[in-house]
Length: 390
Image 1 (cartoon, helix red, strand yellow):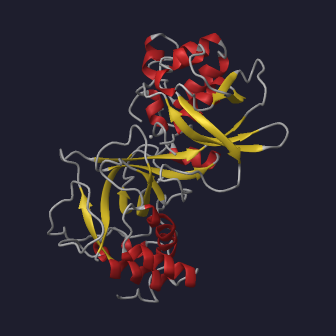
Image 2 (cartoon, helix red, strand yellow; image 1 turned 135 degrees about the horizontal axis):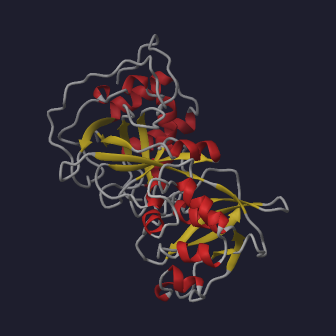
Image 3 (cartoon, rainbow, N blue to C red; image 1 turned 90 degrees about the horizontal axis):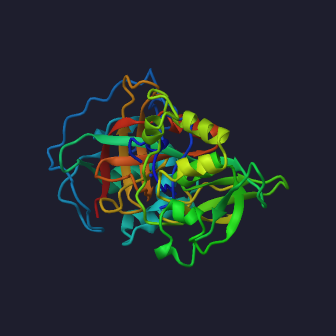
């Protein structure tokens, strides 16, 4: 689902298959538990001041720095009870997300089959049962970047935009289908000049199409009441280039005013040739498919619906789709951060800026509220691979 990355990358500081988006952005997420355990909100959570910090001893295990074969017993790992925040997790929600996402692993293993069977027979397992399942079947291995650098958590969402079936002076940018001559379409400038053998599926405002292509998917609403889902179909193979810095260098935006909002506003005020020229500073181009909106969440690179706040985009050279991952993104004193994010996530998506071992893009959901929160996430990150015991 994440074609380019978080909206911070729009501005040129980096970027997230399918795509990423416009938030209220910065620049372009067997021992049973005791029945008396404290009740806390679902994780990952945006700040819980009454939750005490978790102090746990470092595991005496080597760091995991590469793909791990499945299935098979693992020679090392730490109990899940040592994970930061494990006791505060919504284990029922975690089990539901795991059972729905683990099946895309290339090699199925027993823990996945057991989770699916459990959820089929008991769709609403108790919190104690869900927690005991994970603690019986998994150990955790912390993953670290090969160069020792810090990890990074960003976030993305599925935007909603107005669209038209025929072009007019306001809705003058086409949503193009995957072209028959994909290998030879060239850069954005060439495509907008007509190099792609594509069909115009719909028409959008320049600023909306630009950010839809960064997100890689979204929902389109039409005056006749129809709602369609725009999903990533292909890209032209060009690298993503942030447009904020060159816009500032040209004097189009102030040096200290290159936010996503500022970029969007400029494109909106200059629709037509000027907007096209600036958008062409980014040679990468995303093509789409349209399908009726079924009300479900967006689909990621693993080709299954994403769970809001339970799905992450990862580097597929380091992770496998369908892996369970524990993340800890500490908001700390980050300016603009709404809190911290920790919990069990499923690796179900990827994006062009999601590279490295300890790098994740958290899917926040659909709509403006999700977008506003997604734009505040740029947290230092720790990640643990949840390894099946057998």
